[in-house]
Length: 141
Length: 149
Image (cartoon, rainbow over all chains, first blue to last red; front, side, top):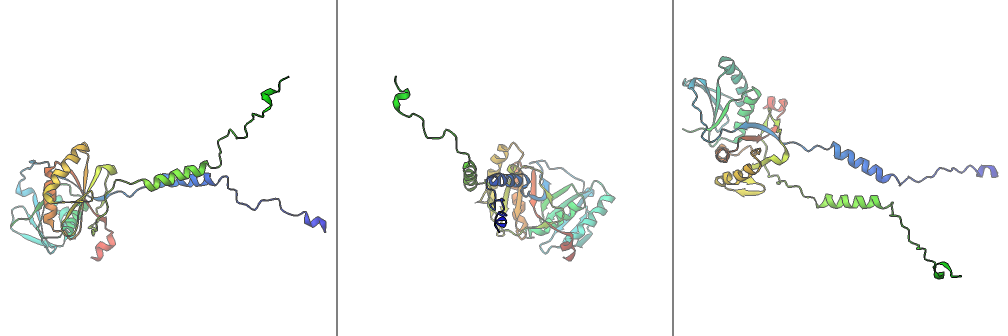
């Protein structure tokens, strides 16, 4: 059966190693190009310039007072009427106020002992509602 | 008749080719060397619990123009890994702000539970340093978690 012995395959059983470096570089360049670093994210605000305080009529101010327990008191201008709401209710209140008075400014006054997160919650609600004129203050008194 | 070359075989046995096969190995060696030795100029993350906000946006600014101010839960302030007193912040930021050609964006990375008075003092310091663009760094809040709250 000498004929059968000649059937030995001529195909090499080794993985070709000459192009391995090329493949590695190809992968390297692919990942270099496709990698994006995570961007910083947050709520952007613009601080006023020093001494750039502007007098605003009381009629155009919506006072938003944040208490240490997270409840929010809403006062319109000079009226003594106080409305107490949860922070996430601010979105609806702001939309309502803007439709009544397009010149209104949100004065967010946070109690010194109130946690930062409640201020962020209120700011978030105002941002979602599209508010642009927001003044961040410390609640005194 | 003189024999050419004085009878010595002058032909050098050394190949004049640069060896090709190890070039990739050298390239990888350099690559790994630079990967290991490169240090990015970035401050370490402080242990804070992020506040969450639904209106979280990406900051449209180059990474080198963003300066992080960390406020950890007990009210300590860190800039570039170094703790500072609140009163010093303005003096630290002002030269950096001028050096960046007034393009610097300050990212306030404060813990959820920090008392607001700290944040307010920090804002006043930033106003004194002339900074205009400030971002309260937050995590994106999903609608689902918001409705559950």
